[in-house]
Image 1 (cartoon, rainbow, N blue to C red):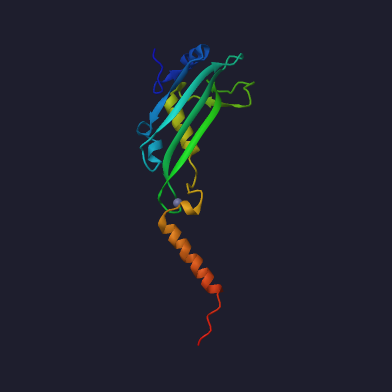
Image 2: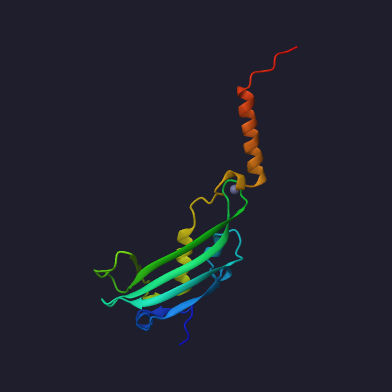
Length: 170
Ligand SMILES: [Zn+2]
């Protein structure tokens, strides 16, 4: 079976990927991530992602996730687009059934499968959505669009005016 970022893998299939230390990697267009693309300013762009499967001696299937993405958000201060870059390297343990088994390595996050199925692209989409800032804003005011900058300049002017002593009349 050819490996695909868009395929759904059962718990058994994941175990077999882990045993084979399979790797699934590729590039996903934002257009295909229907929930994520609603949250970003432009749906153009893509994310490079890699999933490396493995197995712990205790019998867990592990997933090593790596991704790099850059996308546009709308700055909540000036309402103009801003570029956000996110990259992450993280390890997970696939948890089937109800309880999280004991002895999971501390640096591995448990992944509870819904319906005992796992889709790499869907998992990545959840990760991307969780990475979004609550209130996106340009890091520095100088990066904001012209409107905010001129408002800021006006405020600055009125501040200095109010503290300035009036010129003496002739
Ligand atoms: Zn801004």
